[in-house]
Length: 132
Image 1 (tube, rainbow, N blue to C red):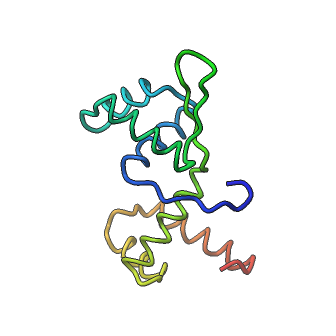
Image 2: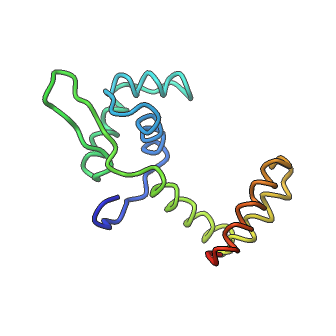
């Protein structure tokens, strides 16, 4: 995000909308609503519209009204939002310890041996660059 403006943490519904926009680029409410209906659960168009209007007020989205169909664009970067959510999750669930999260993740059997090798390679690279 530009100018170091704090990024507001999106709600779950807002995050679902942002994910559609990050994947597909600027879109109409109809497109976003249809995509959400395909992915998750039945979502009412007016509910999607209202959430997106709130997101504009929160500066999570911008709205282009120059054409008949309004087009919405995310104002927040995907990585910035992921960092906020991850930081909060690690602080809340693991008392700020990323290593405890990593141990839990690796021990959960949800991580493939290939992913473990990729993590090891990344940690080694970070260690060599003194960024750990």
